[in-house]
Image (cartoon, rainbow, N blue to C red; front, side, top):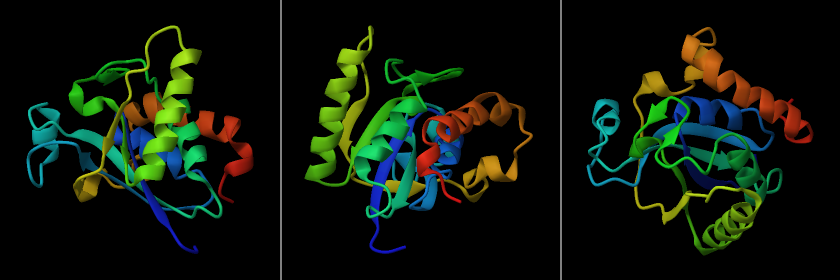
Length: 177
């Protein structure tokens, strides 16, 4: 990969979001983790308690010469429901909120414009938060590449697989080989 940039998104369970982004060309590392909270180095158990303020997120290293930030936004909003407040499917709590953590002013501008346009497309309000990324904490090793390591896991089959299929169908021209 050439020069890379970072993007950070939270849209429910990080296993599902991570697996969807790994399908795209121009993606380097996709790391599951936590952002947006008050506790330093939180554990999965702490984040799941809903008391740390963190969201489950994925941090994406990408090559902007291959896949642009606005394309990442398009994929992100296609694989989760931005109108669900503090939940995605069966996962409920602030740790599953819809959030874009921007890394710079350009990402903030692009995400704000995308969210505003989306809000007009939905009957319900888009509740996606837009916040600056202050600190990203990498999740425990067993969360990394979870879908790849556990493709037959019932949760993955029911929740991650449909997101992957959606990416493969809707973004076929952007898939990695």
